[in-house]
Image (tube, rainbow, N blue to C red; front, top):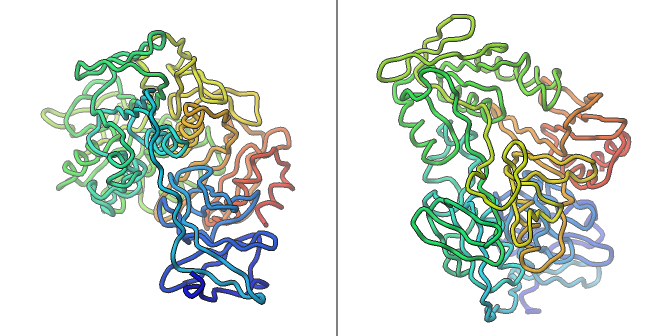
Length: 511
C-alpha cells in the first residue's frame, strides 16, 4: 500500500469548513480536514453525482450541495438521504506536512447473513421504500424482506417526471433508478408487484391483489399519495391527465404529438414544473388556479409573485382566481370551461390539484381526518407498524405541530428512521424538511416548514433568482427559500436543526 500512496495536498492548505477535491490516478477524491486528521472519500455524491466540495462541512457532517444528503466526516457513512449509500474511503497518511492518498478504495469486511426467521414488509416501492430496504440491510437485518408495490420494476427518481421527462430532457426509460440494478438479488429482497388489498395491524397480515397473504413481524407503509381527479363534467375525457408515475408520463408524452395548447389546472409546485417543461417544448401553456398568487400559501405573496413573473417572462399565461367547471370535447378534450363562462381551446390538460393519502387498505389503525396515519417521532403508528412520507402525520421537530409533508426527501428521511427502528434501533425524526423545485433552469430550495409566518426577510435579488428568503414566525426562522445559494443553503440545512433567530441564520449561511 505504501508504494501506491501519492501526494495530494499540503495539510496547511486544507480547510475544515469545506472539502477539497483532488485527483489521484484519475480518481476524484474529496479531502476533509478534521483537526489534526485528514479523511479521503469519493468526491461525488452517490445519489446524483453532485461535487461534494461545493457543499459544506458542519456538525461533523459532509452536506451535499444539490439535495442536502449528509455523510459522517469521521468515516463517510450515510446519515441522511437522498443518497442511500455512504462514501467510499481511501487510505490517507500525513508525512512532513504532506497529505498522501492511495487511489485504491478501502473495502469493508464481507457480510455473512445470519439466520433470522423474521419477516419485514415495505409497502410502497418508491423513494421511501427504496430507502427503507437499503437501511434495513445496512442496519444488519438478515431476515426475509419483501418490497411491495404495483409499479413494474425498480424504484426510480419520480421527481424527474415533471422536471425533466415532460421537457424532453430525459426519456422515461432513462429515469435514474434509486438502487443498483442488482440490489434486490444481492440483498435478498423479494419484489412483489401487486396492490395491498388489506393490511390488518391487529393480526399483522397483508392481503395482496394477487391473492397472496403475507404475515409480517414489522411493516412500513410508504404508499404515498393518490392524485385527486377533478369532479367536473368531462374529467374522464382522453387528453385530461394526472401525473404521478412513469406510465403517466409516457401517456402524456404520446399525447403531445402535434399538440400546441396545454392547460395546467393548479398552480402547485408540480403544476408549475410541468408548465416550465411544456414551455421548453414550445407549447402554449396556461395555468389556471383559484388562488390570487401562485404558492402564496407556502411562501407568501411576494415570493409567489416572483414565481409568477419568472413563468410569465418565459411565456406562461396565468388565469388566477379562476376555476375550471367542465372539460369539453367529443372523443377527446378540446376546451376547458371556466366559472366565468369563458371557453379556452386546449389540446392537453394536466391536473395538479393535490393528492390524498393512499391508506384505504389499512385496518386496525385510526386514521387522521385527511386519511393520513398518525405516527410518533420514531415513525411508529402501532406496535410493529410504521409509516413514512406523504401518508405520515408526524410531529414536526422544533415545533408543537403534527402534520403531513408531501416532499420526496422527507419521505426518505422518515423511511430511514423507521427502518432503523424496525431493525431494533431507537431513532427519532429530528431532521429539517427539504424540498427542491426547478423552473426554467432555476433551481430553488425550500428548507424547514412554515405552516404560517408573520414576516418575510429577503437577502438578495428575487427577480435575478439569487437570494435567500427567510420566513419568520415569532422572531424565529421557520423556513428558508434559496436560489443560486447552494453552499449557504447546505450550511443552513444543518444549522436549522436548532431554532434560529434571523441573525443566527444569516451567520450560519455566511459560514
